[in-house]
Length: 335
Image (cartoon, rainbow, N blue to C red):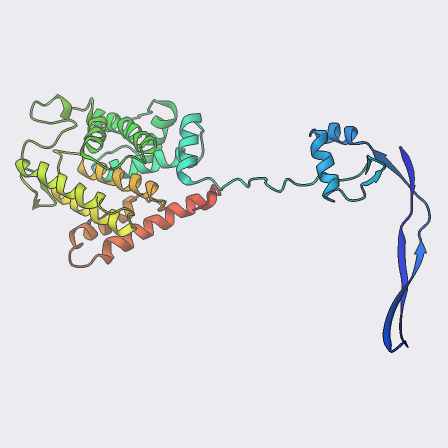
């Protein structure tokens, strides 16, 4: 209902001090001016509750706590200015910034195209496979991920390159889905099983898909532990690594170096090792990284020189991490 409201303005203030009966008295006198009539519409509690889509009880609480400017009582009825603003909820929760892991999981489930999940799948798969001899291009890798097809003109493509590309996509999905899983032999073997399933290697009687190697192998002209030694070495490595409650960037790199030196599988060790690093970085809120082709030789040097100078590998991986941070900045993802 329309009411007439008036505002009082203090024009000036006079202060007086005088003495009487051996006492000092202080008097402050305000001189007021009255603003002209202002026509203002007021609403009832019921009207405001309907307007703001809240309960009448909430409106009364706001009024009684002085949180609605200009509201006043007439008897037991609250009169609320028509243009009053709804107070913010004092216990309103602020949404926490989403983590990279949460965004990767969301985009994976929703099959969102063009985001960080999409870019990670293509870039990590292309670079990691390319380091191990895959001849597929980045565009061909992207085309397989986006369309499940491949365009080939006037060239010969190894079928294994295509199979291992699609398998690597599945491996990335596995680490995103099981980031919180403690690193163990079963998980690592499952990654290897996914990566090598359906390949020509899987058809060889002597090749163990999803299990440790049966024959000795070398890496970079360096001998690796014998097959009969691998099981105990892997158990010891995982026990030592998992004994640390919180893993640092350097802890993850150290595990990677030891894993690559054990070289537990007949083939696929580099890709499995880099997938594990990506998973563990996500788990411990460390920005992950992708070793790109132009960092490959620095990466190999870092693995070889780890015992003498850790800085080679650390600096290489930090450079790769900076590049991934640039992706996160572009997609406006906090880290």
